[in-house]
Image 1 (cartoon, rainbow, N blue to C red):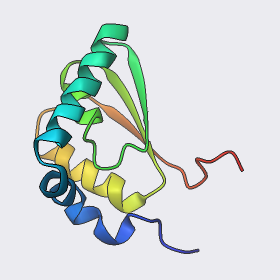
Image 2: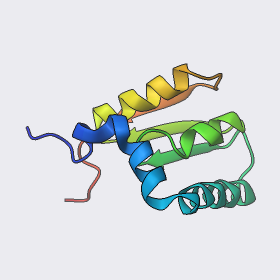
Image 3: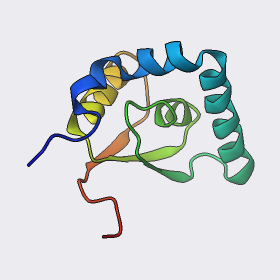
Image 4: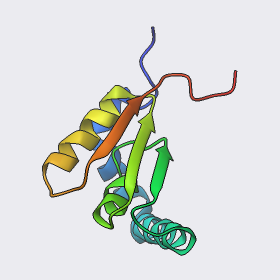
Length: 103
């Protein structure tokens, strides 16, 4: 089985995007979180497909949403778990699934 697309750079994924896109990356994150808050209220369940390192899931969990984080890349989810351990967050369910497409 071949490696997942982001497995080799999961440890620097967030840094690479922050440096590449700067404030736009933060603004996109905030706009997405605000949109979710306009649609549903905590403790609604949110499924984050392509959760990666938790860019959206972690702030939503902090707001009280119940999160299911789905990503095909175990390394990305491992980094997500590390970030969760560094803070105080609600429980997040993790699902590592390698077939997210409709093939």
